Image (cartoon, rainbow, N blue to C red):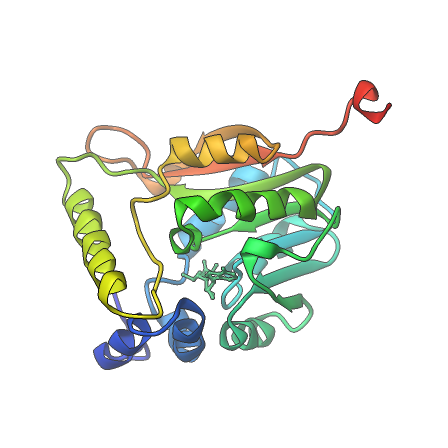
Length: 244
Ligand SMILES: C[S@@+](CC[C@H](N)C(=O)[O-])C[C@H]1O[C@@H](n2cnc3c(N)ncnc32)[C@H](O)[C@@H]1O
């Protein structure tokens, strides 16, 4: 899973004992050699699923890290692409990967954009937000989009309880809970706190209309359910009555 150019175990433990922002600052130069960078298969499946939804003008990658989602926006958007992240180290790597992108350092729980984008995407970052933080995150993305704009969120489906992945995720989350009870600052990263149903509910509460598309190219669990979904959250265009 980790290439020889990735971080050492000592560096990973150091990251896990920092804050999320500081941890990513430290990990940034080696991040693309870890399994935490969203794999190309997920990026390609997202482009494929979105290619019929466009055309798109401007695009925003929320929690862009080193720029995985920026590469998706480049393939779908005709105009400016923007990445936002709170780690200066990750943004520095994103700048090297895509010198033409606009990169903004900001907390995704308080996004500084209004009616600016036609497409927003986010990959691999939802686990960094507690359920109570999702409304602020989704409201900020809703505000950032133009009416009719689309937010696409790739999300792993909960594995069935009979699978190894289910118990591995549970074990990881319990370890993180213990770590965050005894160590400050907390490192928020949980696998099981963002189930699809709750995410859909919070997106609707933020004002989106929500659809989900299975990314079947990425495989299925043993019970036949898809491993990944693409959540398509659309910011409605106001009707004539709401303009009065
Ligand atoms: C696992 S990385 C994913 C990076 C990239 N999207 C990808 O898929 O490869 C998570 C990213 O989310 C960023 N992040 C986490 N919490 C954030 C927050 N509250 N505001 C902005 N960025 C945040 C981290 O700095 C990190 O770059």
